[in-house]
Image (tube, rainbow, N blue to C red; front, side):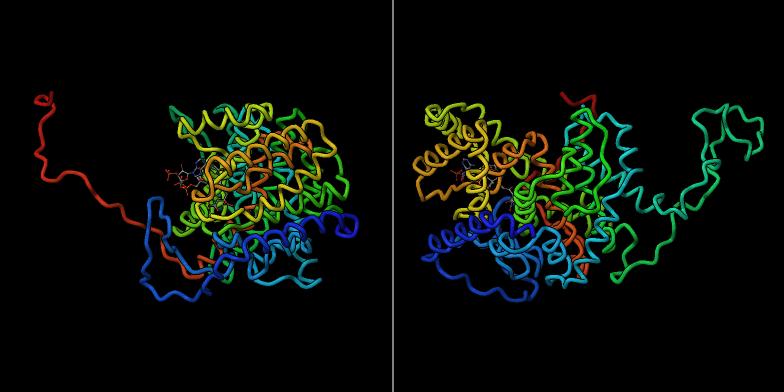
Length: 468
Ligand code: SDX
């Protein structure tokens, strides 16, 4: 249904795919990848550039061909024919779901999107004054609490066992012993249900269900953060809506038109996974210590926040507004180049070709900007900047737009404010984070790289009195 009503979006994606394949056809075909025989030889640069951390079947990025593949499926095909729910299932399970499997998966997502207690806990914090990603990370901690200790009805603590706020109101289940100070004792020692561990032998906060909970719940938390920052109460999810549509609904209070739903769905598909990028690596490092998935996703959110990573999409909009006119693009770029600054939304550690995600997001921005005066202004500045960067850096530096360059214009045209751009990235990437963590834990080894010590040796200790 969604695809039928938005055929022009499907055609836009397929046109981008055709252009991509034509432009990169001359690049050498990549050698097929093969299983690793450890220890493996690889040339490692600063920032672990080129280091091979593990094997994976989840996703493949080819920098020279500009390919992005999820479990063998080309990203353009997934954008044209799939949905974020299907792609999340694919990343987690390794195959596209059957009708029944997708139905059951959607039921899980609908169940886990509903989190009134977590929303209530979230509202007890100054969300409107917090960085949106900090609020999102806080929300995942509250989700952990809800899921692992208190959210299962049969384990909700009976209130009388909880100590009152101050010493005078201590319930009399502990007979006063005339102590000089209150002795706080919680009635129920046993916190949280002892869940049976799942197939990987993992504890409740790390099993497949916590992946479903996180994929469903991070969207609800991000939407709740958006609502609270806009001065509204969070909304209950609408079980009739798709993941993308429900996310827009919970964020804005209005059920989106098919076109808006489809654009959000494609944006979520595009951002879902991308090799061992900084935030995925951060979540894997935390999981490799056998900490749990909520902490892993929290680490992923923290890393994604940085302007060199997921935070770039918000910075791009700041830059486009700072440039303000097409005529100012050239002088602005010359200034930045003189300062040896980084242009937000450009460049990539892996892509030395046009980021396939930008190949879809650029035309989507163009499509949406037709109906938005402010969006059209931003688009024209962005397109002028892209032309200037290409001519200024030339082809040798291979600096192309990346996923963050046009995504902000797409979201702006949808009426979404810039501080929510990176949370939206996290709403999608939580599928990749949880899938990669689940896969890595099948052959877990704690991450522990080395640092080359270049300091001094044999220093003699001097008491402080003798130090000048
Ligand atoms: C994401 O890893 C992933 O897959 C990430 C991501 C994902 O889906 O998870 O794709 C999402 O994070 C996209 C990137 C968003 N970040 C930005 O747009 C910020 C601006 N980009 C740059 O900071 C940079 O390109 C990085 C951080 C993305 C990549 O950095 P690298 O690989 O460390 O590259 P580098 O900084 O070593 O640059 C190599 C050269 C340098 O010139 P020299 O010192 O060799 O002369 O290219 C230049 C850089 O100065 N360069 C840039 C540039 N990017 C690279 N110069 C100006 N502007 C830029 N954006």
